[in-house]
Length: 615
Image 1: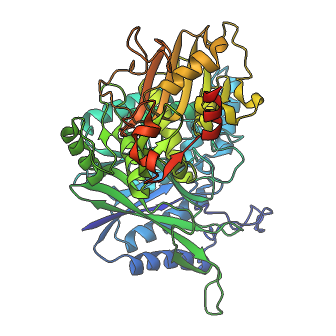
Image 2: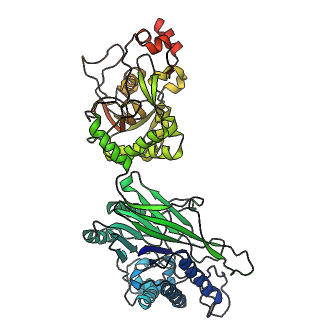
């Protein structure tokens, strides 16, 4: 039998009248009310049930997940009607109680009860904070017991678990209302309590994929701040704990906006987030819910994400609230699927096979992938870059000259990566990933983006690590730049002892050594260590050493190169290029250049170079 999770949030079952029997002054913003025999509320629930029945076949086993704000004011009458609506939904869709998760939102915390308990506590000399009075949960606890015939554990961070044994999936329900008191508050979960509870669960469910759900939005889609309605410091701690315990997906509500995205710098750290939106909104916000279909196989475990929106009524015979309709995820910027487990892709398996076969061989007109297991080991970004190059066909063969001394028979067109926003995003994240995995983040005082490409790639790192930053052109293009573009605009008076240089491609490091010793010797004379990070290494040294860009006394071209021992080099992907075999006399010895038998691509001003050479 197929399995699916129905995710609804923010029902806001609302009182239809005040104590005097008058309509609420603030109005009613939910289709679900406490009005007896209210046809609209019942029809709204029926429309939801019928839509599920029609769109999803009878062979589905459903889970119902409700991520808070079940009521509007945590009033007993609201909870009473919420029970009726939820019982109708679960009975009609044949959802067992063991497949239901009900989580409290801040609107399910009774502010009056909290305030009264706090007042009494104060008169007795109780030093607890207002939010620590758990009388605030009394009415939700009563509702919970009436529905489940089991107690709501207000002392725990993880208040419910649903286990999918066949799929090895664990859905956890968390209480994010710790800080909520009679004046409201932000989402907050006690970190140490959560860590201890997750550690206990991990011993039993270590091989399970894990999803957490709670009420408060830990991200925001439309608010000015991206941190959601959450305590800022606690948010950082909670996300770090999720990452530590391998949480792959978080589900929530609260903001009344549907959303789904993923975040993280590398594949194994990716975390998905989904907000189902507001289920019963009667105002300007369009009601919505989501259905997550579990698709499990030996190769992959993924969740199909379906967004269902309530369309406005446009026919005389339609209910006032309209009708439910599934949406095109692409048009609404929604993820099609959530990947929880994925076996190595065919491309990565091919790459790993290539690694064993290469042994210094160059496949004609094809890039060579060489894994550098001792330095940077994350195959996710290696594979990403390799596939971008392969699919976009940007590994070119021909004659490419960058200077009189720098020539090759292959070239990677980096511009095709940088002008695609998705590829650029991956490229910047790959640079960050190298810095993180190789633990370089505390080892540099200054960042230099080398070349236009390096300048673009460096932007995220310069912001993330909050270090002084400058840009320099490639050394072989210095003569093409204005004098103001050729200076670091930063005086190094013993400030930067360690410098990070970020660039796109490095071959043998000659241009870097020229930059350090010829173009900017004054700046680098006070530098003890120069860390270089690039997307691609196109050289032939497969020693896996971080020292491959340094030169040794007596074993370098002292006419066109420089002695250097301070460079520590890291890269994402090795794609070896074939260097031009001819030396200084290439113009007479290379038949292609000499007789014009093919196109030679010059990436420098050759006329200026010849003029300079003749002087």
